[in-house]
Image 1 (cartoon, rainbow, N blue to C red):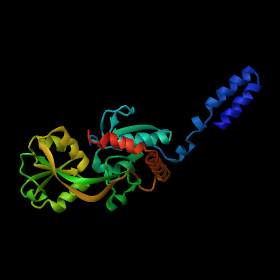
Image 2: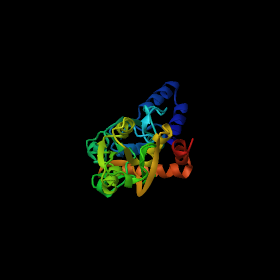
Image 3: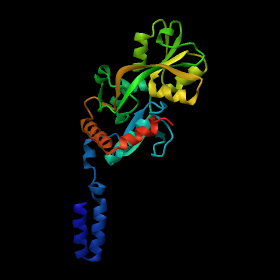
Image 4: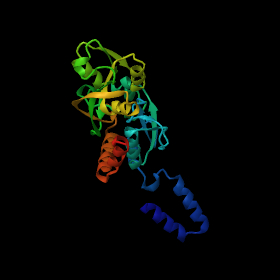
Length: 273
């Protein structure tokens, strides 16, 4: 901004023709507008000036269609990253991808996007292939069943079909604790929810906020148990390749928390209505 003021001052001293020429020269300059985020050149973005996000959609309340941020998608993850992008002076773009390839690091390594945002739990196994941001959300696992199922706990799942999302910590928890159950893998919650409604599975074991959305939407389903697995979500980055961007995102997340904007977004999606 200071440089522009100096140029403007010099232009006033010069002739009108020179002033117009000077303005054109300023517009054509490689320097970013508004003092610019010239650090973005070091972010290694897939598309210059844009924070490209990959996410497995739908997964309400974290990712879903709609909203007014210009991407066609909304949800807690998306709105947090919309605020992050604004702080980094970047546009936001979101595309729908499969969760398994995202959590394994394959999608990120292919350069499809700059960041993965899909309610992804930070685990040591995933850290082998992905770099994570600082945690931005703490979660529980949960068991959702029909109110007429007679299932009251994970101990009642022997002989039952339990739906899980492939490649998730919910699937891992079910493998370790749902004794005698048949686990049925689905690519996303977009298939899990219709499956239990159609009677193809007897229960869904997955992240508590997602099951809570289903409980709110249809009172013939209920969460009968939650499980504290010390899970925290992080945004994912290509391993070893996005250091500057990761640091910038972490800085923006801290600013959002300190300013109270994070809490406002949190309340929009998680406060009981």
